[in-house]
Length: 119
Image 1 (spheres, one colour):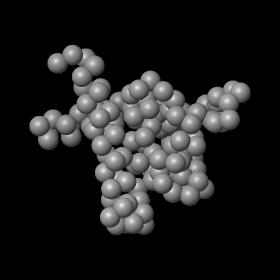
Image 2 (cartoon, helix red, strand yellow; image 1 turned 45 degrees about the horizontal axis):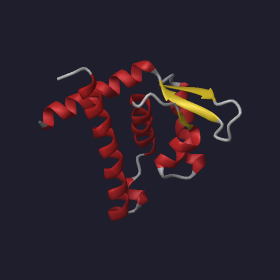
Image 3 (cartoon, one colour; image 1 turned 30 degrees about the vertical axis):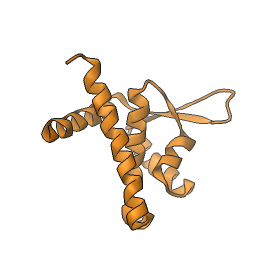
Image 4 (tube, one colour; image 1 turned 60 degrees about the horizontal axis):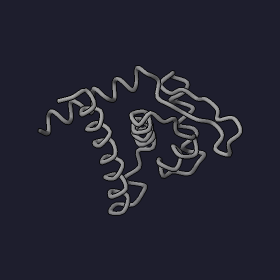
């Protein structure tokens, strides 16, 4: 196994988690399937693993909640130092966002554990 295979597998698992959330929302409705903070962290992990910084708008959209709700969650997570807010100068997307390195590492470890337990 090469060094790039685990990262792809972890990002694939994270992508599958987002897809499963959407399926739960379709079956149960958004009220019963809502996990905005977790969903935003998973979306940020995917962007992080792809070497991208997501826009706040993209992360809010991934949460599937009203923007004000998503922004409250982001503010709470940012206040704990778990995400890094930046700017994209000259773009319409506004602020960019990334996982703090420690949280990215913790999520990667969690996903690796889930992958090894399922295999």
